[in-house]
Image (cartoon, rainbow, N blue to C red; front, side, top):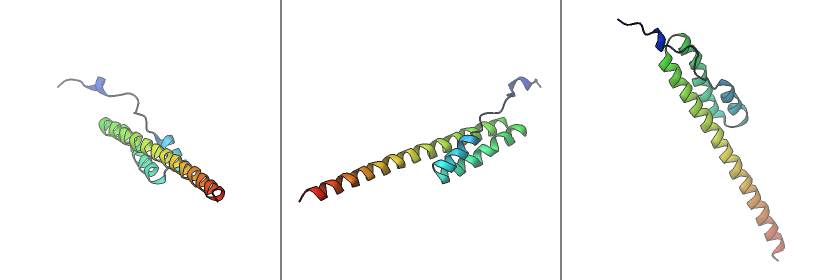
Length: 97
């Protein structure tokens, strides 16, 4: 039996908790909540010795946080495009006759 202590990481992976909370508050509630759930598991799993589980939870937290962020950016861009289109069509409709 060999000693495998050198394979254990000394610091936990990034937990994405702050980013997930900000996405939840300012961007996209459902994806942000999923990000918070995974982010809260990172340190718990790492402390329990489940290094692989902590890495997977970190990856999932990052994935859902980024999805929430980019979906909300897409929604805001679409919203502003629809507003601009609505303003321009209203302008042309008013000045066409």
